[in-house]
Image (cartoon, rainbow, N blue to C red):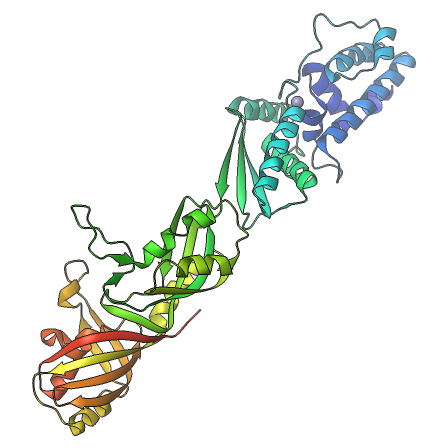
Length: 438
Ligand SMILES: [Zn+2]
């Protein structure tokens, strides 16, 4: 009577149907009802379901329900509960070992414990401050679980993958006190149950700062010729690579807001740069020590590191470089003798001037020929002698300053050469100021 009075959708009824057919561990049973009741582990949920179901069936048997007796025997065996008294009462004995869980073969608890401990050990050793767990589950496990969910039309189940990620995460958190971070974890551990390995994906360490270049013929990147020899003795990249030992990273790359030519010095407040250390051993780095290490590399290259940043900062800094203004100083030689008056005229002519530039001849081999328009905000000059003057040029980012001076055979219009009606030669160029636009 009681049996038939139960709602056909009742949980106990479903559990009886499932456990009559499939032996399941507490976790795997609990997981099939994971979204019912909160704040319970699937193991607790599964155990509670088993106990309730067995109690229900036991009651029915005691009340004389013959059909229930058979159910009780099957459920008792497949629930794998150590209810020795009950087993004895109904003369149930296993033939061979107790059946293993149909889905996980009773491996889940061990998997959670073993991997959590290994991960926790690594987190402590490498002083990580946040982590995330990923899991790769064998396909046949996923299939088995999906088949049961379909067979019994279950709606409240969760996947084994989800449970493992959460449970390992929870346990690691308990063991280490370090928190799971879904947004930007310092390290992601991918637990692979196909080959029983853990793969680490370590987030790069990004550090924002500026660099200055006090010498000439220093490139940003290490520039190798086809024969493998260096084109320039020194590069900004050299200084950065020299700190790999300190950061214990597998590689270091740089993201720079724009670039200056190798023969141009980068002075003033410096140029924004982001150092990216790949697979760093630690994420908590002492910026001052790193800064000192960078600066001890060469007297010609100096850094001022400001803060650690997230990856999205890279695009902001790069974008900022085209929007930011810059101030240059040029020492210019003129074929024709010039007077101070000529220079005053030049200043006036270029006040707020929009300049049309086709891609400079000198970079045509690596860059597409196109036309760009950039603004010169202000020019200030200093007369040195009839063939020599100094100019301070404040202009929009991305303007080719050497070509603004020479005119590049008419590819830049207007130009200083054209305005002064003389052939000009830029002898020396320095960047004095790069506006930090972040
Ligand atoms: Zn299981």
